[in-house]
Length: 375
Image (cartoon, rainbow, N blue to C red):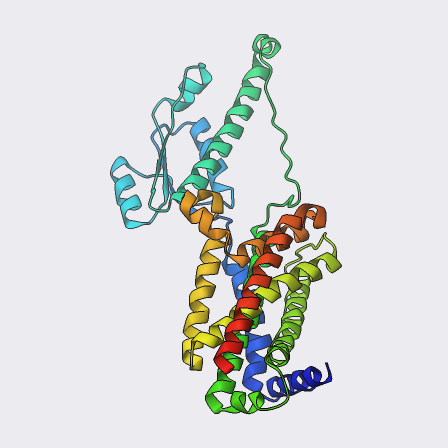
C-alpha cells in the first residue's frame, strides 16, 4: 500500500503542476454545466403562431387573446389570409397556424358545433406534438369558460349540465422544470469524461514518453501500477462530481432528496466501470490522439444510448437490448431517481448490480490486457 500511495502522490503532483490539466478537470466542466444547463431543455416556448381570424367577432378576439397572453406562443399576425398559411409554414416563419372560420362566435352561442382548424409544421415531430398539446389545453379552457358564461345566463341549462374540472398535480417535479431532469444527466457525462478520457490519455502519455517502461522495471507489480494510475482519477472524479452537484444545487436549485452515502456508493461503482474502460482503451492504442478518438467514440455512443436525449422506450427493440450494455444509462437513471425521488438501495439495487457486474468485468479484462501488453 505504501508503494501505491507514493505512485498516487506522484500522479496527483503531475496533475496539479499542469495548469492546462487543471483547467480541463475543473474549469471546462463548470462552463459546460452552465451552458448545457440552460441550452439543453425539453421545455418548448415562444412558438411562432399564425392566426387567421375570418370571424372577427368578440368571441374570436377573446380566443386570440388566450393565445397572445401565454409564454408558449409568439403571435406572428392575426390578420392572416388563406394564402399566408402555406407561405408562413413553408418559410419557417410559423410552426403552427390557427384558422378561425366565419360564424364561429355565432355557432358557439347557438350551441352548434363550431370548428377550428389547426395546421402544424410537422418537420420537428416533438415540437409539433407539444404545440398541439398547448393548443388543445388553451381551447379546452376557453370552451369551459364560455360554457360557464352560457350557464350563468341560462339557469335551465345550468341545472342539467355538470362540468368536469380536472385537477392535476405533478409529483417529484411540481414546477415541471426540465433543468431538474437534465442536470443529473450532464453531471453523469462530465464524470464519464473525467474518469475514462483522462485515465486512458494519462497511461498512453506514459507509454509515449517511455516512463511506463521505467515503471515496469521497478518492484511495482502491474496491479500496483494500475491502482496508482487509477486512484488519482477516481479521487478527481469524486471531487469533480461534488463540485458539479454543488453548482447544480446552488445555481440551478436542483433538489437532492436522496441519501448522499448511497449516492457515493453508486458513483464508486460507476467510476469503476469508466476507469476500466480508460485502462482498456490505453492497451489498444499507442498515441494520445488515438486514445482521444476512441474515448470520444465510446462517449458519444454511451450518450446517445443512455436515454439522456431520447427515451429508451421509443427506440427499436434491438437498440433497447444494446442499451443494457451502456453504463451511462444506469448512472443517469440513478442520479435522477436519487435527486428527485429520493430513491434508496431498495429501489436502485438492479442498477447497482448491473454496474457492479459490468465494472468488475471491464476492470478485470482491462487489467489482464494491461498485464499482457506490459509483460
